[in-house]
Length: 123
Image (cartoon, rainbow, N blue to C red):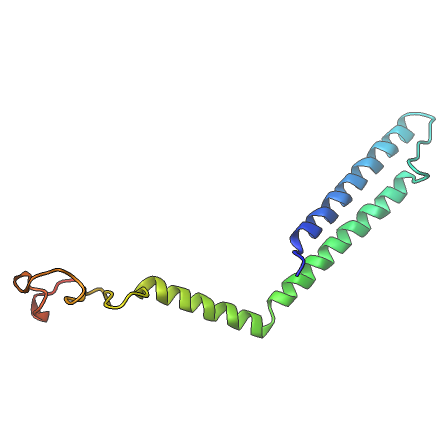
């Protein structure tokens, strides 16, 4: 699938560039008697190009956002976030610490440390 963000950025760049070119042409027209055009495009044409580019960028961004908000997509995203959080807390290793208490079988602690008796645990 083609990434959408570079296309949106390109449309925004095209819109701002067209707006800047139109502004320069309009300033030259207002300050002199010369009526400049670029490829027969006047300042108002550059304004229309800029508006079209901005509207296309907004429509593309909205369409992408709506596609991300579909129930199946958001459910999968929540499921993956939950699994990632669970794995971050509990780890994937056998014998990992659970509920904040170390697993005596997984550590090299001796029987005299107080870890074997639950009454001596703190935490």
